[in-house]
Image 1 (cartoon, one colour):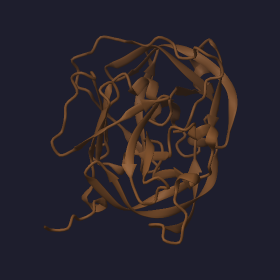
Image 2: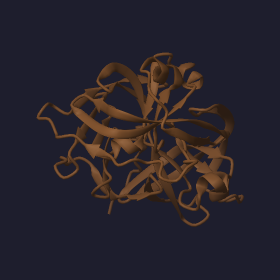
Image 3: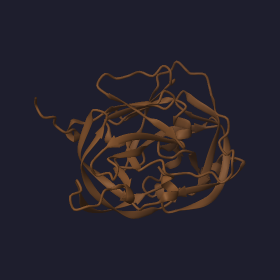
Image 4: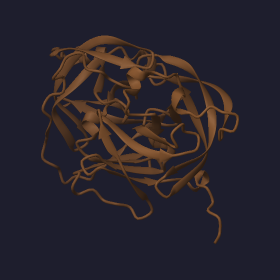
Length: 300
């Protein structure tokens, strides 16, 4: 959902992927906030526990109360950072984290008080981060409300989608988009399934009288640490490869060089797409978009 900065070097442990099962890869999920995807997960063989799927969080998180319930022993401490602040929290190494037949062993996880997200859905006990998801090719299907996990070298491709290149930088999945609303003509956006709308840092939006966007109002942004108010606007057009998306609501984030870190201009919500397949090992994503957000191409 947001950014996690390790306090100590060597925080990420060696990740081992267990043998792939022949079971069906579909994982049904339920939703909250219309875009949050919540799946059943198992920790060290115990569960299921409700975990929020968040491609924008680079480290898996568990509720401090769940860590106590499972009698996990801390393996150190780390600094957990979001838009509104940071805190030092316990760090654990999980024996295994499993979603259906897919498991990762030796996965690091940070524990935090999850009262903010539990205020939206009290059943959430953790956040499934990109450190788990990127071990697989993962399909988020908002139409069928299911997630599918595949071996990265055996992932299917759906004919209706548009394939775009991705970059994995600093544990972030980045997709380049083109728009006249950008100060440079393009935005490098981090794929984030925890945000409902495109979000862009204020210093990356072109602010002149003829800018191709309009102010709309204010919303409250919820992160795993806290919440804060932000302005919104409508961007008239955004291009991803040959896709031309129109009239998109955008959250304007306060400029924060420490979080931007010179690698990203904002966030791209996974829920913008009907389906999205991400293969971080092969550096591509396949997007399937609702026709309502596509610009009609002029007839030749």
